Image (tube, rainbow, N blue to C red; front, top):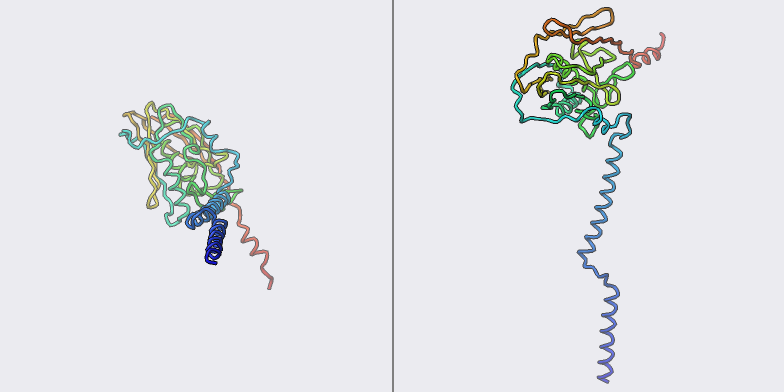
Length: 287
């Protein structure tokens, strides 16, 4: 009888062991938790990728950013180089209380400050500054579109290009491409602005001074300044900039030592009447 009970007890123990093995997954509890965590991380990563794709600007454009490399060889910054000779400087003013527009000015200035332009090289504003996108730090501010001022990404960047234009103009470099705004602006004298638009309008100049130059830019306390420095002590001559108006046409002329070497014309339209006033007027009831 004792032998029979011993056999039955041994059989029961074997069954329990086998049952336990069949329920064991082969992974400790910690590993199972880690596996679940990995699944969660994967899901989170997928969600983040989708969100980024959704919120980033549409990459389809008529002027892809990589195409700018074919305009001129890209310029680089040279903050440590020696450019001891100041050739020209120009300052425009902005409303520092306008936070979004100020942010756009600073984003463009960050790209331009300490840019070196070797002798004989070309400068392209769009190529150097890059596409104005949310990921590049740009926000919505007033831009010109279809004859009126509307909110648009990168509003205010044209003040930067205009400030650079007036500075290098005083430095007597060769202006290659410059376009005026379609509407009147107030931060520079009419006829002395230079508008830019990523897919259509660019500001460009060529360094014809016979020495490397560097642009420095600052943007603070309502003052936007561009200064041109040179590596060598060169003589740019007596530079005089004048702007005259004849009817609706503004003519800018640069003379060096009394001789004209650059001229450009500008015409501006008046902004459209706002649609808000029209709607208010049409809905007014007669007494």
